[in-house]
Length: 320
Image (tube, rainbow, N blue to C red; front, side):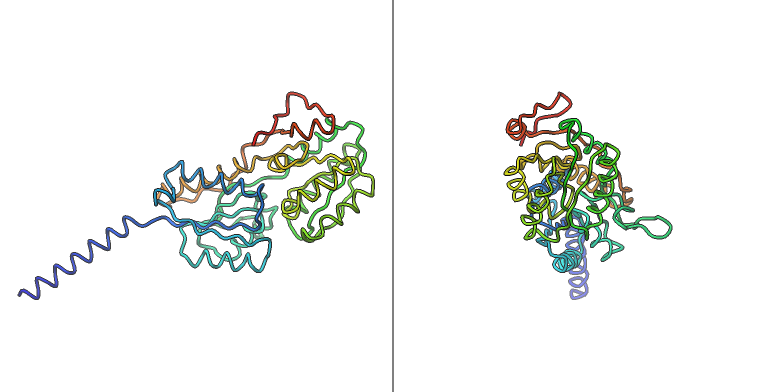
């Protein structure tokens, strides 16, 4: 009888411990980055802050992040994604297009919260019925904003005739962005000149070759190679007296003259808010992907002064 009571008590204790462990289970969130870059990192900072503002903080031990950065290498990106998924995360956040594409190919179950990525169809993430993966959520961009980004070239440099750029043709987002920009430049009476670049090691030589074509303005596209080697591009352009216009706010902080486009920090923050609300709702319903909501015209005061440009009041001075 005593043995029977001990056995029953043991079972009860184990059950209570098990229930307590489940109640105190820490949320696990994967975060997949493709490159190490200060502009791209703004989105990660925004995501983490949104999660923290909603009660998911590593300091308070309410969340554990499994972070991985592929350092610009695609085979490493695949391995990094697999490692995160092997941790049985509650969701995975993906920063930039290639991270989103990779995660979508490697899991159909784990929720994906994307950022710094184009609309799913532009990234090739829809099936024949134009449906995106059921586990895909987060925040995308349409690239329509590039029309406005091209317009500010004419606004700041009304006599500009040649716009130059370099981009990685292997990146779907870069190719799509280039096509939009090319068409808009034609409409505005400007010639678009481009050269392909495969990695950051080639950037300086390719940029200098482009500058020999006597371009009036360099446009920094949303391209991972440009993000990774922007300082090299900026240095070469400044030597030739060629200003840089972009669609990425973070690049303005790094020396570009002006931009119209999404604020990467706010982009990540918006995705983080969606992820946090999903977790708070006990993962009952995955939010549909939505368009980025914060875009703005920015300029770098120091760069503007160096080029003798005085942007009108529609431009906001960049503040770190």
